[in-house]
Image (cartoon, rainbow, N blue to C red; front, top):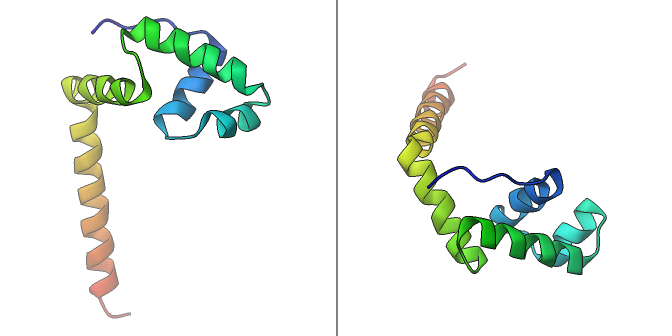
Length: 92
């Protein structure tokens, strides 16, 4: 998948969409109307070649896996979790 260009407002909406926020919550957070959020969402979906939020999430997951970003995050979380467990088990 090639990189797409989003406007600043579309990028804000995109971040909220992929975090699972409702259109209403996005509108409140960004202080725009719900119809404006839906407009930006449609433009984002069209730019990415998807038709809904589920397909957008799947596309994002694919990009993250292909780039290796997701693997790095999982490794980082495992290391952090392991350190936390070790420090919690050591008596003070």
